[in-house]
Length: 504
Image 1 (tube, helix red, strand yellow):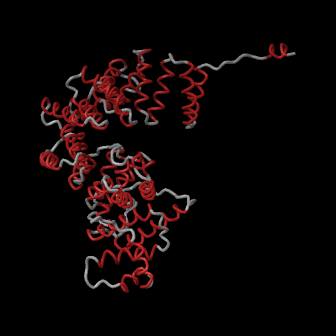
Image 2 (image 1 turned 90 degrees about the vertical axis):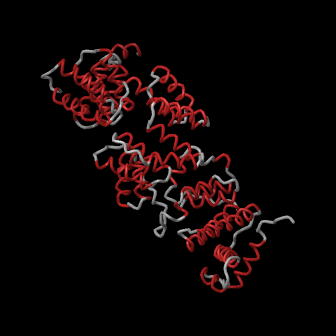
């Protein structure tokens, strides 16, 4: 019986052409997800068909995946080097990638092969664009395609934390192209991120010796000095950078991003805004720094406009605006918005100071920038209490299961009550919180229950103020927190138990 059924089956194994036609029809109906699926399958079944490869390359180029499109179109070109349409789309993808020299070469080749072809006018537009943009880029920013893709591969590896693999690629580029300074600069960054700081700086010194005034090397060196807290060297280098007036777009961008990172927001905004005025189409990083520098230099409307553009490019950044966690009363001058102050607390040797830093991080416009940095916060080295304060600042939802969980939430409530009274924080406010977190650390380690947050906040406030100022009364402090004087007195005595004990 099975044999009779088998004889009636008509064998049909779809090939690449079958899926190619389905992909074309899906594109014509604007069903691009289906088109992507069908053309991808067509390529898998017919990997040596140049026209199928070309069509898939065009589709993913339109989806914005330019590097992937380049690889596919280059493969198609290798199979059929004389196909005019493939040559044109190679010109287009190179233009999208900013490889204008190669874009121009491919566009000119198309014109030579098909001077009256349907894509001749588009090819001329690419040639004109490349010639106009050449004035804005130097040789370092216009590498050959092969070198560019090696460097881009290294950059992606660095973004993924695979620094050793990136270093291997960048070192090979330097061997083959000893004057390609961009590879030196990226290699220095990779060295820096794996802790080879002196090696990273030596590489930049070498660049500056052989290519004097290299802006990327100067900016990277400033960043290294900033992270090392080498104020003397940083100030000296910033004095030089402030005098530089670059013309090329890429140099203005680098200078603006560097100024933003080290906290010179007014200067950063000036350079980054100058690019926008000239029609510069930036990437996500550009709009991130433009939004930050605009906000911290008092240009809030421009900051919000820049951040909207950032979210268009990278929707994952929605809700992470630098001003999102900032109270309406806060100002850029308050300590919550002082990045150096926050980093000093977060990286402090004392746990109570780090707890303060993690708490204030949730109130700061610098939150996203700080938590994104690979060196600032090492979760594995944090105590449970520190992790909880950091989790609070990152808006984690807590599951209350143990007595400690409930005690911590009441400690957090106590902290919030004081913050409401003192924000935006001035110097006096930071001293109050330093005292509170010293008490809080000890109390949490001793399983204190923090039963009455309002009373604890009032008691801390009274202990702080009465030790510094005359005329401070329990009546006034108790009233401001909505508790009675006897309750205040009771909790002052409770907190006294947690003051640090100093041996004679």
